[in-house]
Length: 259
Image (tube, rainbow, N blue to C red; front, top):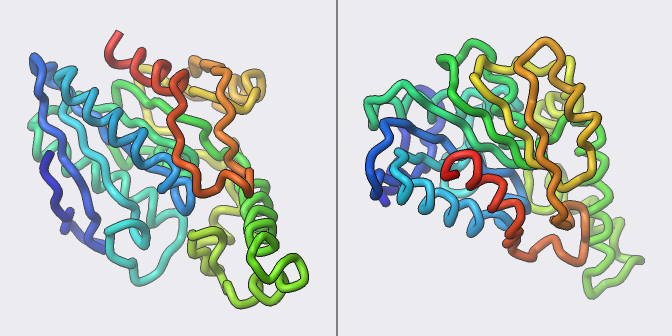
């Protein structure tokens, strides 16, 4: 496991490279983490997944998006900044591994960034998504409601929540949402996606959206939608700091690469 910074044009991105430990497959996987409080909730799960993929013979790279985790702040932040971060990570893993057979794994808004790469990356072998955000306006509304609930649970109680929300500025449960970023997330819908070319697209969903997900990628590769019975509680104010260890999700993600 080798931590480093990706210093290509743009804010330096903190990344961790997991070299193949099993029989090398000659393939690479870039893992795109979620944002805000979901980053912390999923951190351990995706870290374990990366280690397992490396043990299975893959070159694996995980990274923190601009303005998140250990990465530097970008001069200006819009959703396209995070999409470009994925493209930078793909190029970096190509340089490190020497392979052009690459796949993407993404969770939540990290998955959505994968779905907007268009022609910015070479054709991919696999795109694997865990509960991707396909309705940006609904995502923002959910974050607003979650933030208000968390503020209401503060020792000051519900009466002090409006003041706490106001003092939060652009922050929503750990995610900074300046106006440009908020606007660019708010317009995300399936027709707005620029899905990159891939041999296979797999969507692992815990949200019971199998039918709508199947129709969300019209004109692109037909997705394999895997429904798993796991309550991740993405919008649960009681669980917003709780680490996730969704066994069935992990089983579904592993199955794509390690079956």
